Image (cartoon, rainbow, N blue to C red; front, side, top):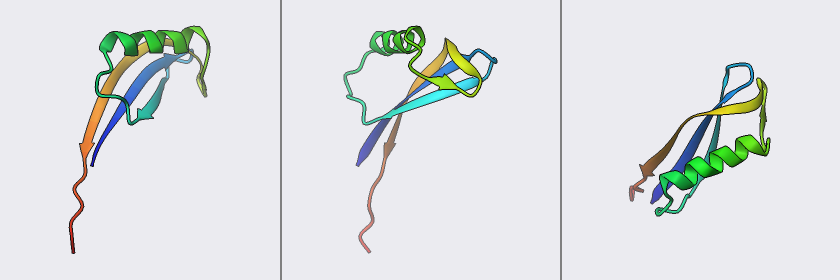
Length: 72
């Protein structure tokens, strides 16, 4: 089984970090779509971290993990 997770990282008002993860993203997602989604999250104040409002994008990563079950 292959799992793909999008980690979106933001800076908040207190200069802290906030990470939001989305599991099972589609393989054809584009960098500009991710950047647009992150801008929208910031603009619409969708999330509030313990450090306050999200202010800027800090980065994004797609993490791919493959799991192989072992027959015992």
